[in-house]
Length: 129
Image 1: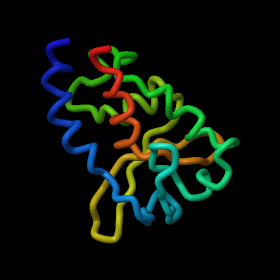
Image 2: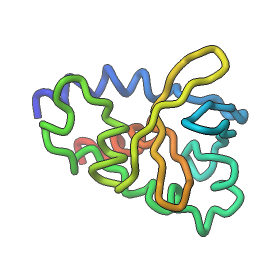
Image 3: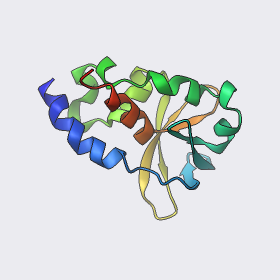
């Protein structure tokens, strides 16, 4: 628990500002994907259009850092990526923007994507509750 108290302010400050409100294009393995804001999350534009049938938006509220074990965050693991794989059942992938900045994304079985910063921010809200 001590580790999480230290990790929370450091990573939250970084993750909270992951995306602006305007659409952003990221290069993910095999394709370019446009991301937009929807229901407090940053998701791919196709997901936002079919919100009721989008796994990323359906699973997003389940993001909860408290469901992780300490070893899930060992060795500097990405908290958003850990929540993606251990709590939400997705696959953590890395993408790059046009300036070569990198970010993590959660890929779901239906092909939808959720930004790792959104996952962490949502999961961290529940910390301490």
